[in-house]
Image (cartoon, rainbow over all chains, first blue to last red):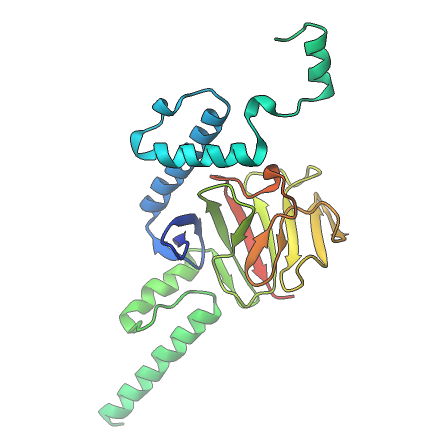
Length: 98
Length: 158
């Protein structure tokens, strides 16, 4: 299996994968990057949803995670402002939740 | 047969082997010599890549993005993406076959066992905007390529 890393022209890592193309990397590097990519994605979700604070994010990742959360807020709005289903709204009105 | 003739014969054979590997979809670094052949051949035997009329592999974006550039050969003019682990038997599975030379035209969506043709205003997940870039048709973040999710792609000739 061939593993690769794909970079933007600026040098920023934008994707990893298997198969042809990109810059070949080892399986170990691929697995390390995959873990890091998924951990960061989870941190972005958690920070966006207010489940954690930025202090819970490793220092070397804080700038990136905060940027991605800010971009998501700009695109989707605050998590608390997300549309809710009619069922959720009814439950709130009737006093079943919150 | 002279030494030079033997050298020419072997050199020609190595060049032919490298060309054949490229036809198989293996990326051959410039300047590869005969001692690099074994590793390149192993890349075929290890699976992945394809060759000839199609190439395949996986791609995992580092950040959620509306578009993604296919990492491999740019001569294929159709592509399919499916999220690894997605149950493609369920309706709405995120899989799209797109003719990436025709922008928003002639796209197919694979739902379960049916291959359906969709029009430009239908809800396909990933479209091509030409070249090797594939784009979600919607500005809805949920339709984008998601950070950390692995997508299998196939690039093939029409």
